[in-house]
Length: 98
Image (cartoon, rainbow, N blue to C red; front, side, top):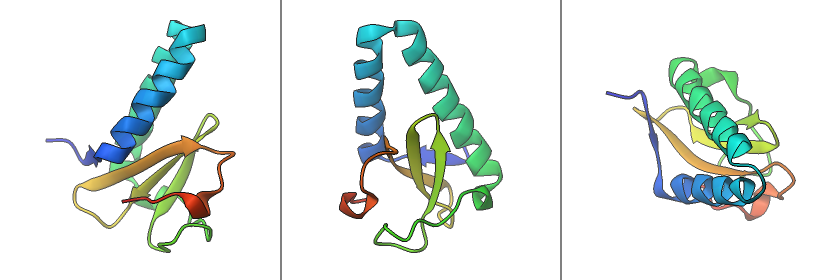
């Protein structure tokens, strides 16, 4: 059993990211998705490695960067929940993590 679960909003985020990148480079899209899922595994092992972003509405959520994307997750959930994967340039206060 996996130590994390990718929530539906995050699944949609990943799908959109990969589709967008794949238009230019399928190899880069595969590289990004591999790196994201490697990070999910690492977060499941070490949920405290992320940091808190005050822009988020919930101070209990963690954030880590993967390339130019931010992974928003719930470090206290068992299994760990990957809530969203968004471009780092987005203003997080508008993101609804759940």
